[in-house]
Image 1 (cartoon, rainbow, N blue to C red):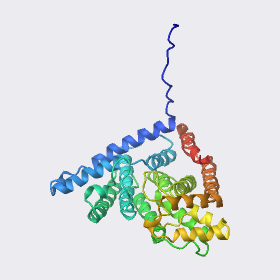
Image 2 (tube, rainbow, N blue to C red):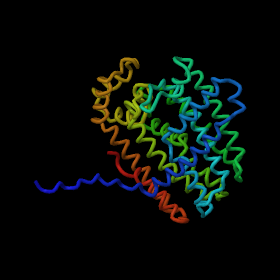
Image 3 (cartoon, one colour):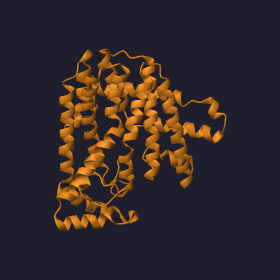
Image 4 (cartoon, rainbow, N blue to C red):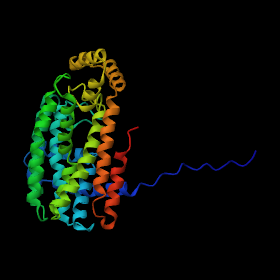
Length: 356
């Protein structure tokens, strides 16, 4: 019997520079977030509230969002021409994440989300049934107030003005959220154009463009640079949002109900409806008008076929790719202190490629 060959484990790919940077930024922000939600004066008031604060901290630590904090830091560093940032900027970044967390918590309640693989949503852990949703809204209000407190008190020049900018962007996108949750018929006049407009409003609301511009504002950047950064953020944000809509049309990644079940008329569905033959269009409308509880796996499977046959997903991808390429073009006009523009180009890069 010959010698037994040595079988080595498959080599692990080293993380890319941009992914390593994202992980470092996320770790720093998570540390600050944990500090911001340690509030001894409040915890002593009520034992249940102390538990709710702990559960909220745990929920935030599992948040997959990494791009917003990284983009705010990038906007600051590009405007300053240096990668050195003051400690107060980290608090502002963390406060902005609290602001988005408050909205995400309210949206989670609106969607009546099912438990996620990594654990039940916060409102399901606060209390069973509708009471959990009510308590989650209260916690979301608390996060909103804490976010404003932290952002406006951050020890960095321009913090108040940057906070006002974030709130103004937040307010201006509420009509889009209202329209999205309101739902509507597929056969509305100008539905594709309306769906794309709502996607742009949601893109602004997600905060990628806002974070870049806000970082530049905190660094005292001139308006011309802020506008160029807005172009990068809007392209990246729209590409990301459209791909999210395509992925969550029927079911979101963590297993909850997708936009179709929730009655949200998003761009991939409108693009499919507008391109369908009359008989396929009528079938889509019939499935769309089913009660939510009747939109089972068989219905969703049929919707997937109809949307793909009509080219709804491919049309969405074309617009997403166009938006991502626009972000790349806008990036080329920016300065490149210490290779930061190249780092951002690597971050945008995956979004400029077709979905698989």
